[in-house]
View 1: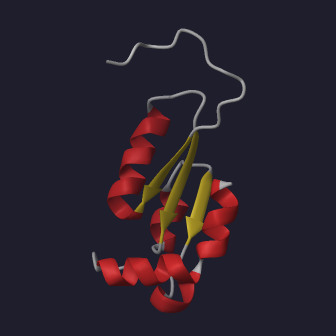
View 2: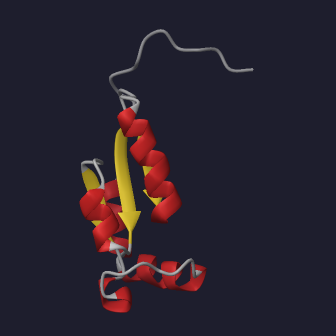
View 3: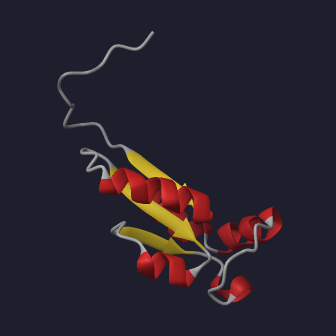
Length: 94
């Protein structure tokens, strides 16, 4: 069982990454709920969705593949988009 922490460690780094439309919506909800001590990141192929988000850290992936459009719920397109920008993703996560 987990016990709630009453104090946050200054050493802890917590990043929540929302990927795609559903992940972006989840992260957007967490930002609106003012969850503290967490860095929120939204990753998407859809440039328009990223422009509309209130999440401060965004990564558009797969620009060459999708030309800024969504992946159409096709996991292979999403995978290829992530592989195209894997170095940028790695930078943000480290």
